[in-house]
Length: 391
Image (cartoon, rainbow, N blue to C red; front, side):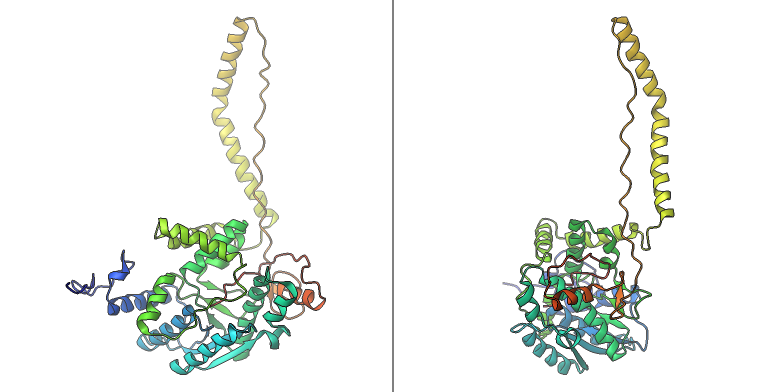
């Protein structure tokens, strides 16, 4: 049999974005196209500036390993002028995180990048093994997600770094969009879909250079480059709600291959419609007037036809010697738009971390753990997010 030829380099070396079947690309073409797309994402979104010190959130999984490899390659090739470091979080999960941290240490040596490890035990006085032993396996991802997000920021602050990049890919973002839709949490879409997350209340900026890269492409790139990564899933994650969203996304992808990026772009469009600031009484009044004006225009435009129909019905009934009550019953009023939760970002009064409430979610969770009341009712704030554990 003749050898399988690359579907592109045999005719032209032009970089074609999103070919229908990348399995037909040779190794060289796929690597070139993948790295060029990441470079395009970085330059289009202006993620970095020269001389910036960037921390790569590293867990030893395929996503963070590929991110570290690609950033190191592109930084040298295109002269970004970045100073790169690896920042890893030790959640304290025996048989999982201790093994993956060994992979991170090997990556640090392979790429020649400094490594900084921050542990839950040092920051919170709890490991995830201890948390799960107290609260059980159901709902433990809420604790881990809140703690992990804050730990990354605190680790970056310890290093004097103000920019953290994470390995979230297109599949992760699509799952987050789907989770927010299933929970009816539209205000969080802006933070979930944005390629850059930043607030005036925090000096730490986050970005997702792999936002538009499929998970399958990341695995294929790691395979072609022979990267060393840890592939075991977290032992506490099977009960996470994200798993249901992931299964739904994968089923959609089987029917429509472009479903993942379609969901991501739909999330971006919906996020642009959600007010980014606080919903004030003034904005609510404006929305109410808009609905009222629409209803008024609708009623006024059809008023003549309605009167003519009533007159005709009344004439027919009078001719038949019957009487009818033509009292017009107005349509029930349209429901007012749901008031979006206020998102006044400030700092926690206890730990100083970014929070939409007086006390951040991490401190509230810790209070429940320390008081042996882990199942206390906690109001969800803007800083809460079910971060996907990098596996």
